[in-house]
Structure formats: C-alpha cells, structure tokens
Image (tube, rainbow, N blue to C red):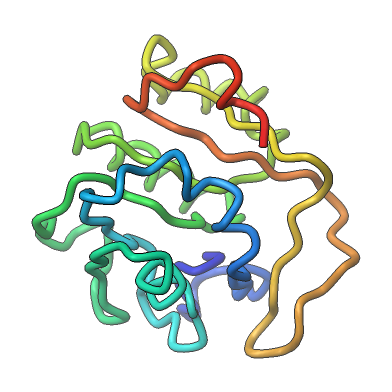
Length: 169
C-alpha cells in the first residue's frame, strides 16, 4: 500500500512509497497542532512517511506492525496515508475510514473517484478531491523515485472543509 503494506497476499505493486515532495504539496492544509496517524504502515519498513511528517513539524503516530483494518485507533486528529492500489484492500480501507469518521487525507489513483464503489462507500457531502499539478511519482521498495507513473493520483480529503482554492495544489 503506498506507505501501507507489503503483505504476501497484497499485490506486489502495492510496495510503493511516498516521497517527501508529494506530502509537502498538502502540508499547508494540515493544522500544525494536529497529531497525524499514518495508518497504512503495516510491514512498510522502507517508508519514510512518518519521518517526513515529523520533519514538517507534526506529531505522528503509526507502526509497521499495526493493521489499520483491525487495530485500535491511536490518539490522533487526522489520518494521512497512501492507501494500496489493489481494489479489494482499498475498498476495505475506505469503509474503515468511513467507520472511524475522523478527518483524513489519502492518496489514490484519481480514476478511483469515478468508480461505483467509491461513490457508494464515501460520504460525498464531506469528501473533497485535492488535485495536484502533474503526476505524483513514487518509490518502489527502497529504490529511487520512479518518474514513469502511468496514472494520475489525487488526494482525497474527508471532513476537512477546504476552500475551493485549496483543492488545487
């Protein structure tokens, strides 16, 4: 899962990690006093996501042994994570996020926002899409960032009440 997991039952292409410049595109949207839960860290030993957010000045909780689908929710104000690409896992995570009801910002393939499952799962009244300029690129299994991403990604926010101007970065 992006910064999420590397389990054997997950598609091998879910081992992509988020570079700091991707997170820097949205850091201005997150109040400094917020504690962030990097929820998709299960087995993501190569991820630098938590340390990136700490370098931005945030308190961050998360652990590579926590499965966000079943673990207790840590004390946090917002969930920020890169969810997996694989549809069945992604749908489970979206459902869990809706059950938790906490504000969040997640990265996902922008085409997913057109999917029936997305519109059925999400509370569309409180969901906003943040559109970055250009493609977001990712790092695979500790390798350097790949600049050949074949799809466009977006940030999906929930309960953030962003202004229209904040939906473009």
